Amino acid sequence: MVVEGSERTRLGSENDDEGEEEIEGWRKKWLRHYASHHQILLVGEGDFSFSSSLASAFGSASNVTATSLDHYDALIRKYKKAKSNLGKLNKRGASLLYRVDATRMKYNADLRVRKFDRIIFNFPHAGFHGKEDNVQLINMHRKLMYGFFWNASQMLRADGEVHVSHKTEAPYCHWNLEELASRNSLKLIDQTAFESKNYPGYHHKRGDGSRCDELFPLGPCSTFKFRFYPGAKEKAREVLGESMTHNNAIHAECRQIYE
Image (cartoon, rainbow, N blue to C red):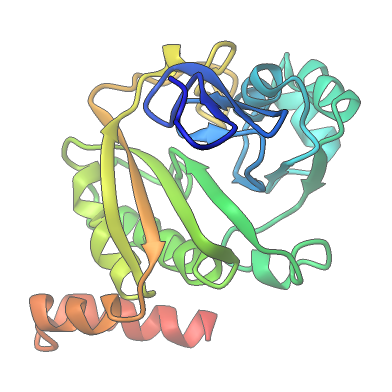
């Protein structure tokens, strides 16, 4: 589609699987919600196959910063394709960072002065410490996400977005991502179905334990998109009510840790 009165030719969009956009002779490449002109930060990257998928679609990874909580040697031991994926990303100019804690990433020496258009955390998990419907484990997941949102909210560019891909059935829906994001001034602006086939080469790995390199069943899941909105925190208080003792206890503990 050619837009009259401009030099803009639209060959793809955020809602397309893949596409290109040309502005004054400079071609941008898209893969779903992400484009080659976005400064992208990926958190908790597993075998780095998601960032590798983006790099393949863009033809470059100079706009990609991909991080893992593991150090390099641990990644190579855990995932058969990690070394290959990291090699491809390195050749395409990606910034690769290890031992990055999602709940303290804004203090990382390589990240603390940077801002991003997209911050992505795919299928976050606090580790296997019992059954997923265990209340204590759900609270561990919630503390992880509270810390992530608190950091991410301070690392966005203007109009930047935080994306979390997450299962939507119980018990995962009980993490209440929207609430945790709102308490950190992030407002949910969109929720779209997530399908791994839209990201060629991406493998959603378990990431922990003896079966860390195996795929886990996705089931119904979505990509939740958030933007910084100063009024989100006050709105969350109005909706949830400050008398919710359980949530307040979690919020107070998280604030003590992260603030």
